[in-house]
Image (cartoon, rainbow, N blue to C red):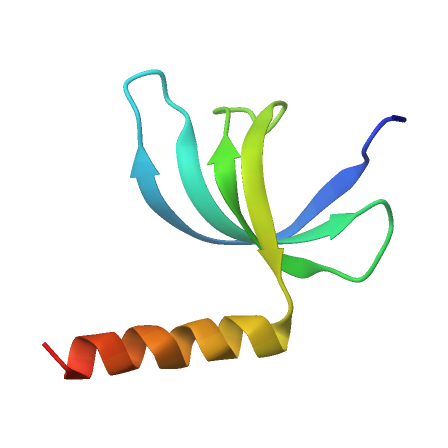
Length: 75
């Protein structure tokens, strides 16, 4: 597997931070020069290292928002 290139296009928000400074972040990231996607994963403080995560298209993020809104309304 070759090197993965990434560029954080926009830092959207931090969900949490652990005692070592790693933060679970939602960002807009371009992977290997492709159009950016929403990305949720753990990042080291300097963004040099990352944990496993998931990427979402605009449509997937909208659907997730709808699901979370429905969950909130039903409580």
